[in-house]
Image (cartoon, rainbow, N blue to C red; front, side):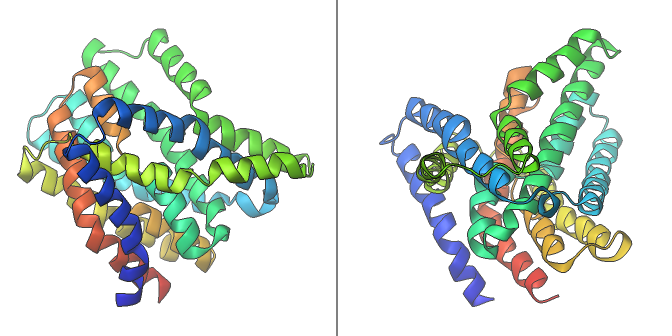
Length: 309
């Protein structure tokens, strides 16, 4: 366990460095915004495309893993929604809380960290998890917020979801890489080198950006943030484990990766959605901050557990 903690510590140390840079204003909010854009649109996309294009398509797609992770995540999402309903919250606020409870920072934190901890073989399962989060749950929260406000699902909402998916660079890079892989075309050496160099900036850039963005997060609504962090860091990996180990068993290695991915802290884009729609941004902010701090201990515990099962 100590060895796993020491292996994960450098990742959180870079997050801490970014937090210090943001808190001290050595790295102002504008700089964080542009670093995040660079990682999101260029570095991380290059990494995703290269891995998707160079892995055999048959080794990437695992239907049982997708179903197991999806059902496990839906269970946690539903629990958070029910608890929010019992507290008499409106549908948009309940949706934000459910998103905090079930959607982790797989793109910026999970992808680089799990690839280094479990080897590049983890990229395939992580991309599947990321795709489920982006396609299913990023769409679901938009639907729930708009239905909660308008009382119906309009064509405009469906159009907004479709445009958002088509413009998402992670989805585009994964899809482009999978198409390249399915066509069994070799990646030319100059292109591979270009993607390798650019994608190499994804890990430090993403981790630093996470930390810098946390510097502006508030710690209000601690009780709610604690509940949502518990859902994300404890319940989510447990429900995914229940699915991919016992109820819908998959091979050991992808199951380990999926469970580890489920143990990651709340995704930063939940706050962006909350702020954009003006729905409970403070509680999303607090959940991201608290879950990220707690994950320094919980993520190594989960990884140690799955590594030994």
